[in-house]
Length: 234
Length: 205
Image 1 (tube, each protein chain N blue to C red):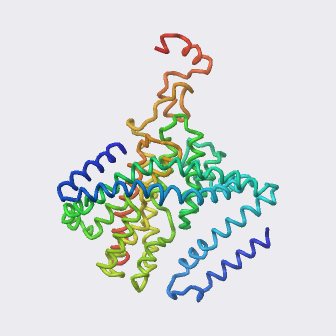
Image 2: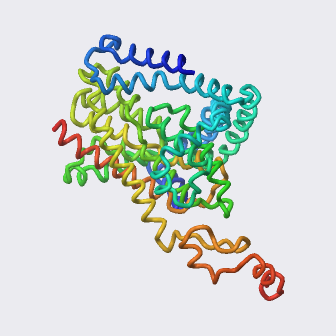
Image 3: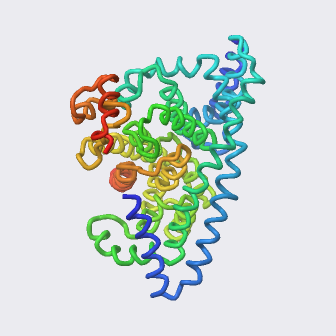
């Protein structure tokens, strides 16, 4: 899907730009964004990342992350059935969500990336997103936060009589978005077009749907004999 | 540890008590959340190391060990970010968003969705700074206390820059095949927008 969206953005940009005589701006903007992706986003992240990963490491070593994960275990196991309940990814995802809820944006991203790294250790197919990753990303894009601080700041700067009026409506709307995110992820992962193919070199996959698709339950020894025969290797 | 905890409870109570905030009409709930988010970073930065030290962790050495990963992760996301941000930048510069907004405007008005919000909503999953600019413009055009502005603020607070989050999060672990993540993320954004408009109509309308 991302392939089509990306292609669509680029081609439509050039077509519209040509039609409205904005091609020069389109070209200039492409260079500007390429530069700012590195200079304004990725590089400033280095220091903040390093700091939060340091704090996170202390929390992990002290057993605080595992403690947090144990408290929220039922919810997390339901949300991410593919992830073992005691896996460090659970604690990392929880810390990231807690930071998002409180609106600590510069802490949330490093903690979230740490969680992605833990999730990747469970991924048998490098380069392909797992169900847990997709669910987690969907929750993240529903922007779970209690106080929409940026919007309030803009309203206050324009002399609104009651800038915090949007707090209640935002919490309700973001709750709807979070529920929709989880529902969409849980629904889409079951569609045939998004089902993960079984991983050949490791035998049947982890989840129930994968093992149902796999051609019989091969033990490790059976696999060795299949792989050794020249016809199976093609 | 207990003394330290009590110290933070004291700071929290001091921040929550009425009269401490500069603008007088904040609700109690807003003051509590505001106080918690103000204190949480100093809290995390001090309590985690203190607790770890009490559990026998060598805090300095382990902090350095964790911090080492920061550079790798940031460098790893660069190709993903450049790819997605260049496409978004080109689309934005061409005026694609305004063109779609103009085309859809009257239809959206007819179903009860203010067309003033359309450019901001279309920008939302693509660019955070672009959305902020459009929200500011909306506030200036429609007034800081109008229904449309409050809808816009609620939308801003309940949706996320999906494509940016996708590039950063998946890029950090080298995920190229994103499967249904885009679709699920955009669904969350769409539901957030629709819910914002409906809820604001009920609450402020």
